[in-house]
Amino acid sequence: MLDTLQTFMNDYGWNILALVGFSLLLLVSLLIIVAFLLLMDRKVWAAVQMRRGPNVVGPFGLLQSFADLLKFVLKEPIIPAGSDKAVFLLAPLATATCALASWAVIPVNENGWGRWVISDMNVGILYLLAISSLGVYGIVMGGWASNSKYPFMGALRSAAQMVSYEVSIGFVIISVLLCVGSLNVTDVVNAQKTGVGTTFGLTSSLLDWHWLPLFPMFVIFFISALAETNRPPFDLVEAESELVAGFMVEYSSTPYLLYMLGEYVSIVAMCAMTTILFLGGWLPPLDIWPLNAVPGLFWFLIKVVFVFFMFAMVKAMVPRYRYDQLMRLGWKVFLPLSLFMVVVTAAVLQFGGFRS
Amino acid sequence: MASALFFYLFAVLAVVAGASVILTKNPVHAVLFLILAFFNAAGLFVLLQAEFLAMLLVIVYVGAVAVLFLFVVMMLDVDFAELKAGFIKNAKIGALIGGIVLVELIALFGYRGFTVSPVMNPSAPIPASITNTRALGEILYTQYVYYFQGAGLILLVAMIGAIVLTLKHRQGVKRQSISAQVARGPATGLEVVKVPSGGSVIPPAVKHPEAAE
Image (cartoon, rainbow over the protein chains, first blue to last red):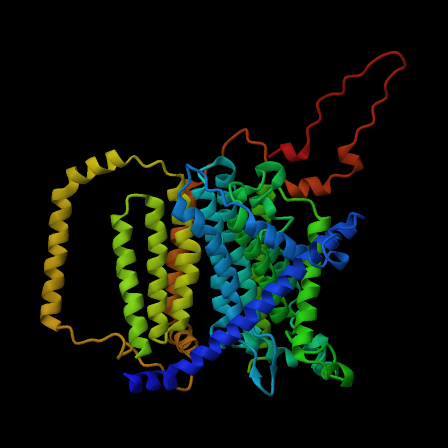
């Protein structure tokens, strides 16, 4: 018995222990970063509207997110009598789990120690696409299980909206993959070491990243990411002026907290995806001394925070779309445009002499 | 050992979820169990080192098809008593068809035996030098490209047929024409009316370009 255990530990055990350790490290740092990004979101929003934002808990309101967390956890969870209790409680868990699961394949750095990623799988991009498309289930299940009008409307809207915008996200990812030639997420970043900038003499600079040659796709991806994460101007799912809070109306306490957490974690995951696909991941903007000596993790975080800042500014400035306009934008504008761009990208790669 | 462990985990969960799909009374719960079954099938694909197929299964079936199932089933108002009456009425035909399929399956496995072990023998070994995504791509898009295009054409025809069958242009519906709205300028959107002092003018009805459709 002891012998078998030892063989098992030698074969799998230490790997599993290391995996659990790294996952915990990633999740804990991710959650702390999300807590501060949530505060940043509110501060940016407040600054645009010339308010102060949260400034009471801790210096400059830095501990506001942690105070909110404690408040939610300590409140009483209310489960409506007419609800489907199992699905009602499963829904926020599904949202939070899907959001956190996407971080398993997101690499944050690569250096002499190897690739800083939990699972360096060779279909990582497809995994990200699959997990982001699962986000809809948390919302649909929550909306249905609440057994109430507004949540159900929110759930129906979300199902249509997320399925629509997933299509254009898929096409954008395909055109990036055509340029890269690999489905591995780390390879996507490494492919951005050479590109347009290298052709014009600025080797390994920010001009090499995919945002420049694939600029239309970058814009489509950014807007579709807003729709996919139900951020304003596409927050019809929880539109407070029409549906009170959409699918979250009946939720309180920890289940509500899980929804909010899942939402923000998936927003940050979308920011990380934008960074990896278009903004060169952990690569420094210029390959010169003080910049390339900075750890790659730092550049990765800076870029993620920059994209999140753009998300926050959009939330502060843009009015909400109407439902038919949302559908028109997704199906009649983004889908043909991204499909056309996939064909153009493939043609340029094939006939422009870029084929490896 | 670990792969066998995971095989039995996924296989048992897939069978249990599959059984629950037809045994559970609530149709929404049935769809959710179906999704669980899809997930476990994806896990089995990963064990067979077909991770591309696994991801595709999750993206296409879980991410799109099952969402539409759920969307439709959630809005259905199913009457269980009526369903059960239908079950008893059609039970004889159902039992007959089920019996035929059972006999066929028994005959098939009696002839072939249970020699294939899915964990030990992946059905088609992947060439060691390339990833299985590339291997699939070379088969689909290079070796069998004409069959692939043919399948695509058939799907396109089916899609157009479905749209033609269901599309209705209702008369008298006011639609928004964004290009017409954007193209509106002072010349078309504004009318200056001279009102005589002490009198009143009721302007004639203006035919807006966006209402023309």
